Length: 109
Image (cartoon, rainbow, N blue to C red; front, side, top):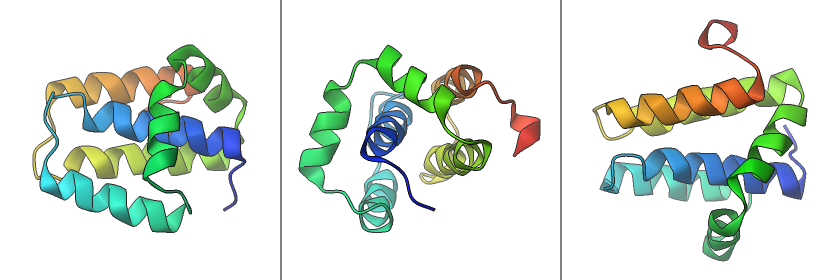
């Protein structure tokens, strides 16, 4: 599945948002992020750009994505949350927030 540059920025922003939700970065989360860098063809500089992206702009981009892209991101955020072996309550809150802005619920994916 191909994402536009703006969509990739928003996706990486949300992945980073969930990774940083519990205020610590687990090595397993970093490993997953490295895998995503290959899968979605981006580098560490791109992560910096995504971090600087306004969250509201990211949410707007996510809302405009196709349903299949939204489902891909929803599954990806779940992968990020469980990658360290523990789903933190703050991660659930961040994922729920992202899903709400994408206008989909957990039952859709």
